Image (tube, rainbow, N blue to C red; front, side):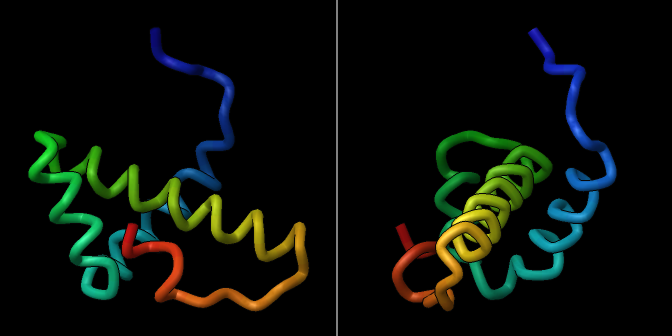
Length: 72
């Protein structure tokens, strides 16, 4: 079942962030591709990662360290 209630603008913004940052998070993207995900679905997974990171940074008001999160 597809989810219908979501902020499409916000999804688009994070999709663009993921598309732009694919060179930075190449390992995560390749990992998702090896799991059998399409290019678009792998980008959406990456976008969700950036959404979680953004939410946590805002909630905890702490700086973000790249090496800790995306590599996993």
